[in-house]
Every structure is written in structure tokens, then in C-alpha cells.
Image 1 (spheres, rainbow, N blue to C red):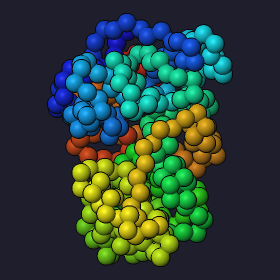
Image 2: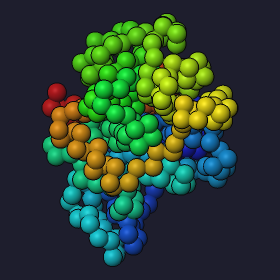
Image 3: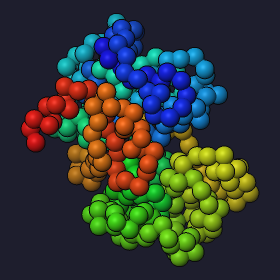
Image 4: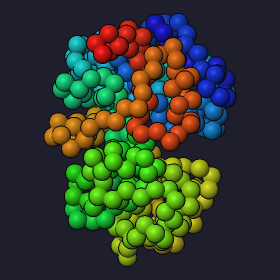
Amino acid sequence: MKAAQIGRYGEPDVLRVSEVDRPVPGAGEVLVLVEASSVNGHDVLVRSGGLKLVSGRKFPLGTGLDFAGVVAEVGPGTDGPRAGERVWGTLHPRERHLTGAAAEYVVVPAGRIAPAPAGMPAADAASLVVAGTTALIALRDSTHLASGEKVLVRGAAGGVGTAAVQIARAMGGHVTALARERYAGALQELGADRVLGYDAGPEQTGSFDVIVDMVGSDLECYRRRLTKNGRMVTVGLSAAALAAIALSTVHGSRRIRTFSANPDAAILRDLAGYVTSGTLRPVVNGIFPLADIAAAHRAFAQGGTLGKHVVMPGTYVDNIRDTN
């Protein structure tokens, strides 16, 4: 089978598509025929060497965390999933894989997949897995957003941001989105009550009960925009962000929080509920064949786009093109 791999740390050109053995599911695992995966910040950090203390120096490394596809084989003694079932899921971000989700097949523990939303195209489903579960964990489990509260989504045009705008609105929040002005109309359609451009400084944004940050800079400036009982979480981690998080612990409940998004089947089922209810829809910026995964990483690194970059095996991309 074909799989995208990292040959060494560096720019997107270190990615290559190789012929590798198809993995075999063990006890408690399933083999999934991957129809689509997406590019996430974790993938870019691993590929560039930003997480080498975790990912190590033994190559090749697989790439890709999330996927949508069809169960091809069930490992011995595995309960739940059935061959032929359409699923979505993730790999564990801290585990080293010779092949990741950017491949024709992937082996994954049965507890890390769930039925994909019925009728949703694979590219759309893959674009929501990491982005949607990260937004859901940030708003529901980390900051405990309550109906009627004011929410600031910083970095609202990206994959997590577009999901956070929609989920915050579905939870009853009054949503302010901070993003490039050219995306104001799209973000309002997704549920933002107000959209501010990046030229608006923190002091111009107002005060908020909840702040969800995808950028990772100027965190203390934004933390000061919290109300008395406000909560803030960031998923845009950097050295400066980690320092700000550590220093903010003196502020008690108004500290800056972070978390490691590690969704299981239960969270994936909850996310599917938002999709089937019509309150969460995918935002796909572009679809790349597996052979062009380096181009997908370059597009992600350039930033300034709306939504997610999706990677698909060539046969599926050809089918999409033939129907357009």
C-alpha cells in the first residue's frame, strides 16, 4: 500500500509517498481503508522537528492523525466495529507510527473510532475529526461554556476555529470571531455574532466569559479581557505560550489553560451529534491527492486560509473530480 512518510525533519519536501506493507490489526484493533485524512498542526510540528523530543530521531515516521474511511478488517477478539462500517477516528498523537492516517490503510485501536455521520462525504468527515473534537473539548470540557455567555474565538478561520464558532453558537454562546476581514461573511454564516479583524487590538475586543485561542501569542493581553469568572484556553502552543500558561496560574480560575486533545469513541459520537443535528458543518479549503501531501503541508504553513486541507488517496480524488 501507499503511505506518506517523513524521511527526516525539515520543510514539506521531506515528505515522501512510499510503498509499505499493509498493517495487520491485532487484538482490540481494526484495519481501516482510509478515504480521507487532514493536515493538522501536530503533523506540521512533527515533520518540522518541533516535537523531536517526543517523536525521536528514528526514520521514517508516518504522518496524519485523523481519518474517515471503511473498516476493512477486525482484529481477533475485537468487539464493536464491523467490516464494511463507515467510521472516523484518530491515532494517538504521542505514539510513533511508521504509517499514519495519510495512507491507504491504517490500523487503530477500536476505542479510537466511531461511526461517521451518515451520508457525509469522506473529505468533509476527515476535516472535522481533530478540529471538531478539539473545539468541543475546549468549549465543553475545559472552559465549560454556558448558554448566554460571551465567547471570543481567536484564529477563527482555521479548522479548529471554524468548528469552535459553530459549537459555541450551538451551546448558546454569543460569539465574537477574530480572523482576517475577508472571512467575515463566511464566519457570520457559521454563527459568529461579530467578526473583528486582526488589526483590532485586545483592548478593542471587549470582555468575555470564555476565550478560545488558536494563535498562541499575546496570551496575557487577551487573558486580561476575561470577566471576573472568565476562562481561557489555548491550543496554539509555543515556547512563549507555555511560559504564559505557567505564569498565569496565579490568577486562579482566570488562568490560561491548555489540554492534549486525545478523542475517544465517546467524544467522536458526541461530535457526530452536532453534525446530524445540523449545527456543525465542515469547512474544507482544498483537497490534495496523497502524492501531493507536501503541497498540502505547504498550504497549511502559509496560513491565512479558511478551513481545513484534506488529503485523499488518488482514486478517491479522481472520483470527486469526475463528478464535478
